[in-house]
Image (cartoon, rainbow, N blue to C red; front, side, top):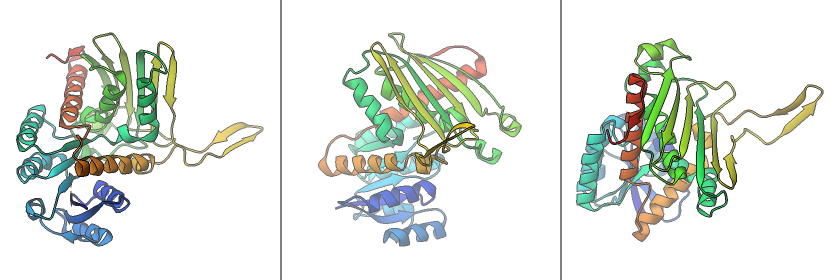
Length: 330
């Protein structure tokens, strides 16, 4: 039995707690949160104990920790968990600073503990199927990847200040998906953006509408489009065009019923937000982590994947601010 400690009992902590409750061979053994009421509520729902984070990490009865706390706490928790010899699953971004991620990487490597960056979209059944079929050669060499990701509504401006901006907070998932599907690392980034949804987001120094073009050494292209507003639901689509054809994953809808009448055809809206859209991905991600830690197999995506996605986000932010192509060698 793999005994897992949950650090962070907010929305994502509750998701991970529910996933672990459905996985044979693993259990939530303890939880910790800066808000005692949140910790107690999740502890009761998981049949676990609530304790301070330091006690949880230091407990001999904990084999692995899941870090779902605010990003600015990840650095210290990663170092503490690595020093304690715990396997680690950490939410993205690992840290807002690439240099601090490198320091976390050094700590993890020195401790020799498994580390998984929680890029859950790799485990979405649809996106995983696209990657597998690319790998099987179905569409030949990849030429263009198109990723569209649009939230139903923007977060409050108060959230923006500590989010790291749209490229580090929202598009970082898409940067990882681009790497997952392109087959080689991007070497240049060009980004544009504007505050078209909420002027207060612009006043906070961020954008809510952005597009990025990534280019690889072979000339493969990835186009990413993000918006903080989609009136029709949570918009998550991927298309990969190759020498022999194309693979595409469309939105998951609230239901599959289609109606037809004199005014045409109608379908249901897209699912409301990420909790519904990626429910299967979150559970598959956790199953992968548990299986790898229990069997001693290497986990992935690893901390290096978290670093590379962060570097792409940093390059996109620099590109937008300076209005130029940024090469990753910078």
